[in-house]
Image 1 (tube, rainbow, N blue to C red):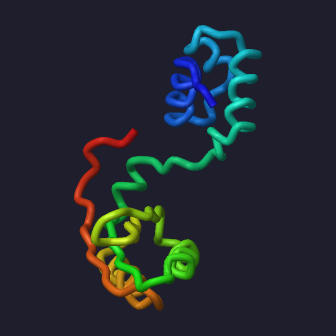
Image 2 (tube, one colour):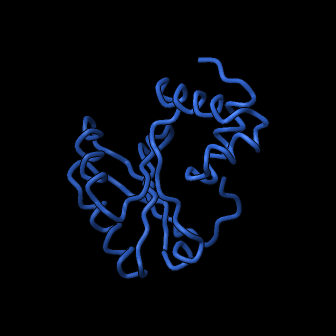
Length: 143
C-alpha cells in the first residue's frame, strides 16, 4: 500500500490522540471531513491502523518503575514463552530481536520489590535460559 503525506500526517496526529474528532482532523490536515473519514476507514481496512489503545498519563507513568528485560531462550521455546509473557499483566511489550538475546520485554511495576518479583518470574519460565535487566530511569523521547 502506498501512503501519501496526508496519510502520514493523519497517522502522526492519531498517534498523539486517537480520540480527536474527525472535524478537527480535517481542519488540521486541510481536508474535508468526508475525505478524512474515508482515509481512516481505508487505513483500518488495509491493516495500517490495527486498533486504538490507551495512552497512560505522564503522572501515572512516573509512578511506575519500568525495566527492559533481555531474554535468551532455549531452542523452540519462543512460542511458549511468548504466550506466558503475554499472560503476565506487568509485561507491557515484548520484542523479538537479533543478537545475543532473543527477546526484550518491557515490564512495569509499582515498586522495586514488585519489579524484582516479575523479573524473577520471567527468569523461571520454562525455556528461558538467561535474563539481563536494566531499570529505566527516564524517558528522553517518546513519540
